[in-house]
Amino acid sequence: MPAYTPEECDLLIAQAVKAKDLEAAVALYEPTAVFVLGTGESVSGHAAIREALVPFMSLETFYFTTETKAFLNAEQDIALVRGTWAATAKGPDGQVIGMSGKNVEVVRRQPDGTWLYMIDHPQGADY
Image (cartoon, rainbow, N blue to C red; front, side):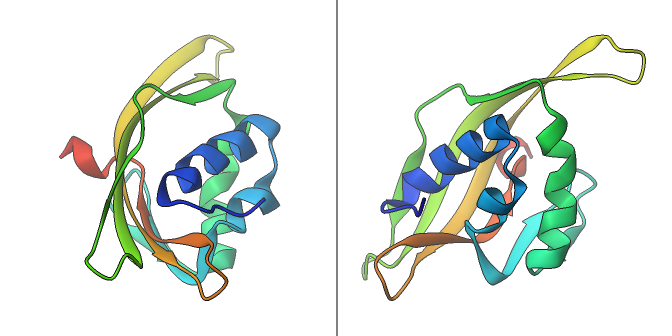
């Protein structure tokens, strides 16, 4: 399902993670998009982003804890999106661990009117 507003990119990525649908998640990115890893390094392109998203598919829960907000440029074709999220996962010992972050992304309106990630930094607003 495509995003028809900048904020829907975050809502749809959350749905894809919850559904463990890696391909639906990757489809929300432009072919040359950049994804920032937890280490601060970044990867680019669908193949690398697919690999970076694999760990998210093992999360027990994933949700946004505040309403996602978008700030659009004057031409209304690029937006900065911010929000906060929380997730739980099972650690190596089987215990449930919690994690959270303040995300920041740049999304762009596509020629068909849908929106895709250009840059996704799940913890970009934490710094």
